[in-house]
Every structure is written in C-alpha cells, then in structure tokens.
Image (cartoon, rainbow, N blue to C red; front, top):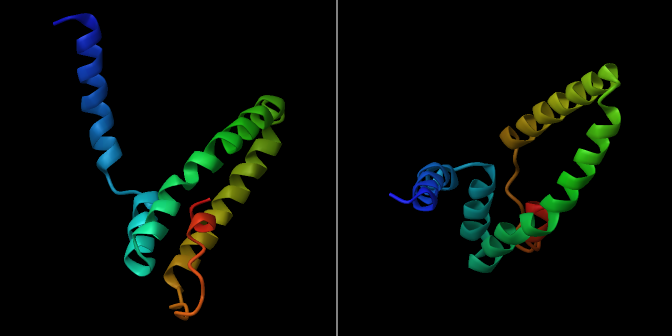
Length: 110
C-alpha cells in the first residue's frame, strides 16, 4: 500500500468515528431541527464556521501571553469549571419556550 493511501485510510479510520459520535453540537443541531425545522438545524450546524476560528485565535494569543502566570491560568480554569457547572444546572432546569418566540438558531450555535 502506498504511504499516502495508508495515511488516508488511517485518517478516515480515526476521523470518521469521531465525527459520527454524538456530542453537544450534534445534539443541539438535532434539537433545533426537531423543534424548528430543517433550516434552523442547518443554521446551528454552520455556526461553528463563523465562531470557532476567531475564538481559537484569541485563545491561543492569550495563552501565549499568560503562560508565565500560573496563578492566572489556575483562575481561568476555576472560572471555566464554574461556568460548566452553571451550564449543567441550566440544562436540567429548561423551560419549554412559547411557540411565538423566534428560534434564534444561529445565535444558539455560536
């Protein structure tokens, strides 16, 4: 087997299962599609195309600058863990929205 073909097969073997596993974004896409239709699901699905690159760039630049300050990184980690706990609490206390409310699918995806 050619080296490039072997790498391609390995990449597909590793990437395909990871891409098909349900995660938070896939759950949100399915939820929006079921509640508000296919267009709302598609809006949520394309939201990371707009939001991920700037977030990653800013995060990398900030972490490069903060690498010397271990206390600051610890504080950021603690804040992040508290935010995740808040999100978990909100996900268990969801109220069903009124039908007259617009879905705002793109904003939910971002």
